[in-house]
Amino acid sequence: MNKNFITCRVCSSNEYDLVSADVSGDQNASVYKCRDCDLVYLYPIMTEAEEKAFYEQEFEKYMEGRSGPGWESPQAHFASYQSEGERRLSLVSPFLSKDDSLLEIGSSTGYFLDDLSGYVKKVIGIEPSKAYREYALSRGIQTLEALSDLGDMKFDVIAIYYVLEHLRDPVEYLMNLKSFLNSGGRILIEVPNVQDILISKYDIPNFGPFYWQKVHYHIFSKDTLSDVVCRAGFGVEIFPEQRYDLSNHMVWMIEGRPGGMGRYSDIFSKELEVSYSEALKRHWVCDTIFAVVTKKD
Ligand SMILES: [Zn+2]
Image 1 (tube, protein in one colour):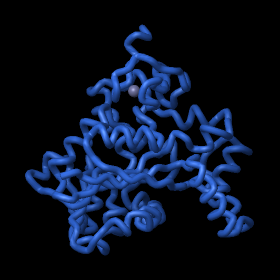
Image 2 (cartoon, protein in one colour):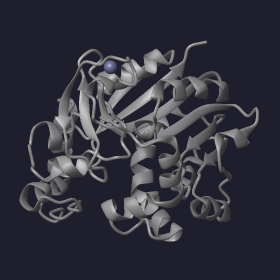
Image 3 (cartoon, helix red, strand yellow):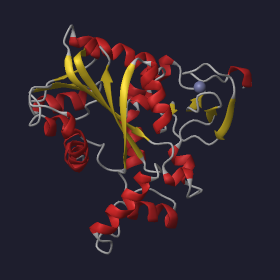
Image 4 (tube, helix red, strand yellow):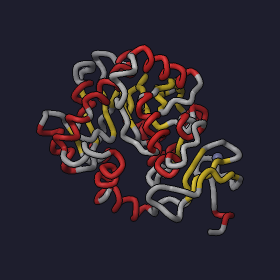
């Protein structure tokens, strides 16, 4: 690999530091941090043809391998993501109004749109997976295959959860979303936080090779996410969020593997969990960033 070709896809800088040469699912890729804009990015990334084939044929199997059961059938996925829908809802509900129309891009089996339908006037999903799309439709959740199927429809709110980190050009993508937003519209974004304490502080040998993945082209911090959103011409408010619990972190430390959620919940009190999560959020070493992005008219 000629290192002169390693380029930050957001600011075009060739100045970088190596973060990790160990990337799950790709022996040729490494993770770098841009010295100019601080963005953490993967290089090289899949070609557009490889990427298309991967998301059409392999993505669900890849996620099942990482996350365990829940990705094997649309029904099981919908059921196992109920608590995730509730978690999201508690964060987004202050930013919704009863008159809003809402589009979710990457709506999966529709579990989140199902929850949201009680809070807004209309929901529509975009989901490339045929099986998931058909399942959502069977539950009465309008779901289309691609943004191009929307025609000239516009929305008050667009939700994109765990999408931005998968994109070749997140700035261009956000700019293109403007044409689907009504005046005063908002985009709700969640992405993993690169400052997650499991990667930034705890130094668990098995965690890095799990965390850095071939499908995550950019891994944001609160500052680099703000930068990307501002480059696309939006305003932004950023909030810290913690998805994984203390048991999950302890199982990573003890056994070096995922899947520990709730393991010690009969011993840890609710207060302890909340206190731990609040401490991580206060120091911005939480696992997740939630952003409310506003269109500047
Ligand atoms: Zn950069």
